[in-house]
Length: 131
Image 1 (spheres, rainbow, N blue to C red):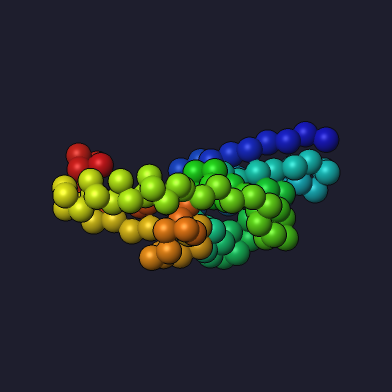
Image 2: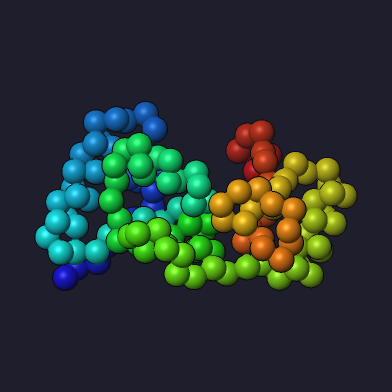
């Protein structure tokens, strides 16, 4: 058995290249059909990426979301979650508020207000220069 892991955006899924995206999906399906394992890795949260995976019919053995904070198996059971430390969240939010950044907390599925359930702080940027 072989194991391959790949980034999702602009690697498997190319926004402006439907042909290559379809070829990638075909290759993934062929690879898995031979008894191999395929892992998709993304900075996206589970909810966002699942919409595209379902729409494009992209299979996987493992799905790593939120830059590694949430790991799922092929039947979408969450295997592991790494939460941010609540005190560190408070410190970061203080700085973001002082600098007037637009941000939100993410629990791996949706925006959240619950600092005990936060896996990522997302800062909205207008462009690459601001990022």
